[in-house]
Image 1 (tube, rainbow, N blue to C red):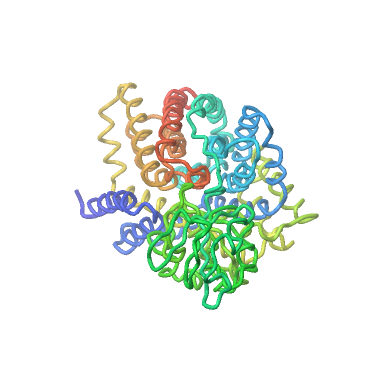
Image 2: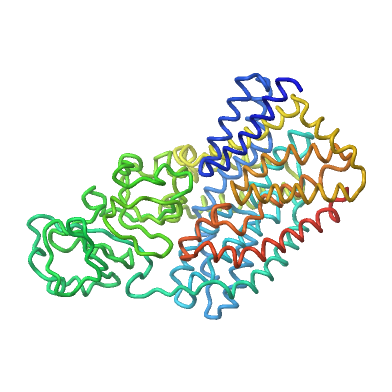
Length: 575
């Protein structure tokens, strides 16, 4: 075995280990692999550059950028208004169906982000009964078309690099429909096991709001009751932090002292009541930002904030924003807001400064639920251009009348020229992580070819000519891809498993399509882990779920999903 082969295999194995060890930083791990392959000369300069501008990758990037304008229209908000009705079963069906259809053509993260708020605030049903089905519906809907999920487009990018041809727009649709129906029926049965989390006086929306009694405050020396702190609208005084100790529950007769930290829980929209008390300062208020619009975000796994406190992270300098409140798994968060250690999945309500929307690190650290990406709505001709243009390009490319890349490029230019998108927004929200992941994956595939690893795998499996062996190999590819998806991320799993699956197909001397489609579908099958798919993380805290909830509801769905894929792929894409 040559030194090139040993080096390439070593980098591949180390990349998988790195992705499992550093789950929050898949782009960083794959970026290191890219550098190693390039510096060691395991790939050529031409291969490096061609990987960066792979037609499938460019199509994926343009699709994401054009969808930003669509998010700023009323389309998703109008759809959201039609979902909630008094009947739980009718609401569930509407939510599942509308989410699946929308996710087949739109960014499923944007679809979920738009629907989270009306679901949490609806007066008829507990949010915990609807949010997990929302995430699963978005995942299943993404399997319906080529553009339904970034996973499909990543596999398409790798397929183009390997064969020169792309996958058809509706290659995934028939099997995707079986998955939506089969897993949807399973989910309808398992939804009865979802927790019914009810809000009460002590948690409301589960937000933790921290305020400090300043020197000279009129509150000092007076009781909680006499200060009127027991009669706030939709806010409840949960605890007092005094000289490092907690006082909870707080008695109405408790006398307030200077430097007391008052911890409230409740409706964040009522937070301005607190600032009306003389000498009572909110954490965000001392940063001079409380009078600005409030924005809600979810902390990503790969965020630089994870494991650090708001004070030690330099939050204001990083984002030109201050945290007004925090929510975690629906649980009460105790202590001073600035000293709370941030975890992935935490909901933060931010008061933002003028430069917040221009910061380029927002999408790397947060899932933006409100006020950031869609803060400037578009209407009239701009909205029509964004909506009709997007639908038109997708429809024409699906019918084979235009090339999707060229159509999206023309639409992107029109959106920029019309002002529907601005360059600052594009730069700030440019999907760098996806670009690095796909580029690295394509380059890794080429390095394996250069080193002859694909030939070695092909020769090893060539001795197994029985069709049963081929089918077992297909099942093994599914299982490995699914495990990587649950442990790492869907995109990284698809990227790493594609070259292996492709080489196995060549070794057996069968059509590569069954193995390609298996990788694509398996990489989207994340239903058990709240961290395997971004929409799962978004609903994890919003629905106040526990890991056991994902296992109870997601495991049957995952099993049905696997059976449909393993049985359906060889039928629809024969060996």
